[in-house]
Amino acid sequence: MEAATMAWTAAGVGMALVYWFVWVMGAAEVKGKRAVDLKMGSITNDKVKDKYTQYWSFFRRPKETATTEASAEKVPAFVDTFYNLVTDIYEWGWGQSFHFSPSLPGRSHREATRVHEERVADLLQAKPGQRLLDVGCGVGGPMRAIAAHSGSNVVGITINEYQVNRARAHNRKAGLDSRCEVVCGNFLSMPFSDASFDGAYSIEATCHAPRLQDVYGEVFRVLKPGGLYVSYEWVTTSLYRADNPEHVEAIHGIERGDALPGLRRQDEIASIAKEVGFEVLKELDLALPPALPWWTRLKMGRIAYWRNSLVVRVLTMLRIAPKGVCEVHEMLYETAQHLTRGGETGIFTPMHMVLLRKPVESK
Ligand SMILES: C=C(CC[C@@H](C)[C@H]1CC[C@H]2C3=CC[C@H]4[C@H](C)[C@@H](O)CC[C@]4(C)[C@H]3CC[C@]12C)C(C)C
Ligand SMILES: C[S@@+](CC[C@H](N)C(=O)[O-])C[C@H]1O[C@@H](n2cnc3c(N)ncnc32)[C@H](O)[C@@H]1O
Image 1: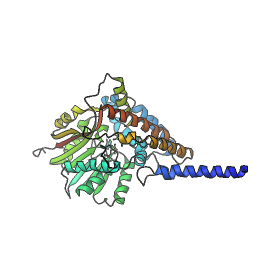
Image 2: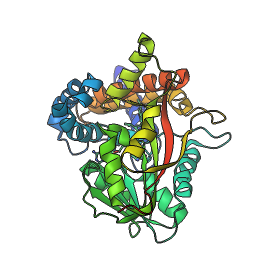
Image 3: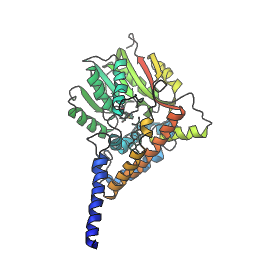
Image 4: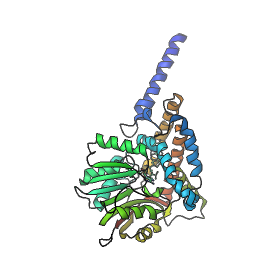
């Protein structure tokens, strides 16, 4: 073969490979967020690396972050930065629901996710026409499932403006925008009137609060007397040993890679809820057997991770994705290992469920 023909053939094969990795394989989990559309939220391309470095140095020592008052105050701003960095990667590689769920035999991840969300609506006994609050709503995957399942109206709050825009666009596309509303704000001080919601829920979101009392107190305030609140909490279990270096490494890894100001213990949740005035109706770790592992989906994805990191590398080289995406992707890959370790050893659960009620006689 002539040199020129060989060069053209190689170029053709190269282009086909790029097309395959980026447009075909890069379409990952959910149609609608493709690798070529990866952005870093509202951070401009030239600021991505700096923002990532700032984030990483802030969350290097998670427990200190929660305990010193000055740095606890900065947590919501850094959580906002975190979601600017990860929201598109999450949507691309996981879907529109940013949480885990127990695997269900013979059912897809998508179905298992929906069942885990509908369980919230059922626990709340949500009814058509009721007004529910989604505390830390992400891009609204759970909100749409819960509104569709129960017929209720849902108002979501998130600290991240980029997520607000994504959630509103998804709500419109799903034809649910008349029943699903999204507000940008801090769940530690919410822009809602007292006693203005029939029910509330939070799915894997309140773990970002330095003090759980603050967010539970706000939910208590905005609920009507008699209103129910369900929360899926990220916690360490009674199997966690602070003197076991492997345990400490996994838990620190989870905290650093997920913007957490220190994980709480499982046995703290109900007492904090009571402290702010709630009645505790139910408390259960939904990850306990007979539930199947929630971390299977993270483990099964090794080939997908490899493919995804290749895709982000190629896109960064071609300057389609901003510089810094590779570092963020690498951080998430490592976080996935720590989460898996936390699940396998049983020292961590992302689904400690509490069902709470604001007493009827309270104001
Ligand atoms: C509740 C929170 C988020 C939980 C999960 C939705 C996310 C935790 C870790 C994330 C991921 C890790 C590895 C990524 C992978 C390297 C990439 O190629 C594709 C996306 C991942 C699978 C990503 C997806 C979302 C998570 C599973 C926290 C923040 C409180
Ligand atoms: C892991 S995501 C879960 C999102 C959603 N519940 C779901 O399951 O898809 C956590 C969410 O909590 C929100 N969040 C964290 N801290 C917050 C704060 N102080 N005020 C409002 N939202 C916050 C984040 O912006 C994000 O939307």
